[in-house]
Image (cartoon, rainbow, N blue to C red):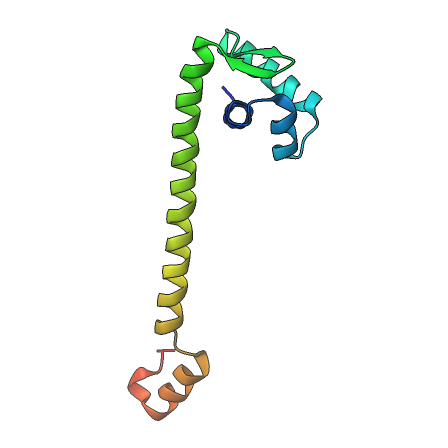
Length: 117
């Protein structure tokens, strides 16, 4: 299954209607409907029942929604962890960096630090 479609399905399920999900995702309602149809084909089962009042999840839809929530949670945690690592590396790098000119000056005043060659 396409993970992007699974996350789109999650948005539809959480919003309660195709039109609300389309607004949230900045897509047309037609595009959302097409992606859901493809996901249902991939799943081999209807995931929701459409009505004029919104949508109702099928048994398969309830199952997929719980997995979609887990996928979304894992992606969110990965994003947070990567951002933390970037920030941590940026701070360490700034604290441990020595400007190249300082290294050159140090090498001139301390010949033992000069690179061979």
